[in-house]
Image (cartoon, rainbow, N blue to C red; front, side, top):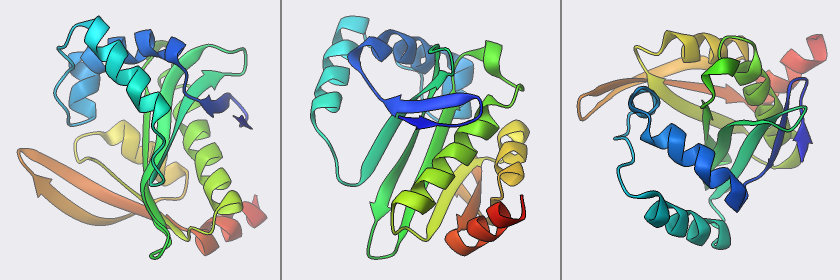
Length: 175
């Protein structure tokens, strides 16, 4: 477990599947993730979910996001881990709308970035978010990410953002 000021990041478990299914089937949340909503029956989703939990990938680490009192409100991960380049991609979703705009996303990102830079040898974390997702961009910038590029993929326009270890450690020393 990794504890932040508002959240706990913990390993994913099978009991998370119901929440994850609900969030991934939600059209608005799927759009914010630039993905189609899940349409498979829950039984199939659960089977696939269980398989994923049992097959660790060296290039990915997934976490559930819980409030300090243990309510599952979202997920975060770092993936596309490339140790030779010293980088990974960050992803986050606060699926429970009751926790939007209350600092849970910012605390999740800050907690995850701090963990990555203090516990791994990675020197760069990057992410992409929809150009129209102002709330996410503000969150990431508040956490120290800097816009670095743009990409158009399919019908989506993305903003790439990044943060580097030295930048993060300097930022943390000042706070």
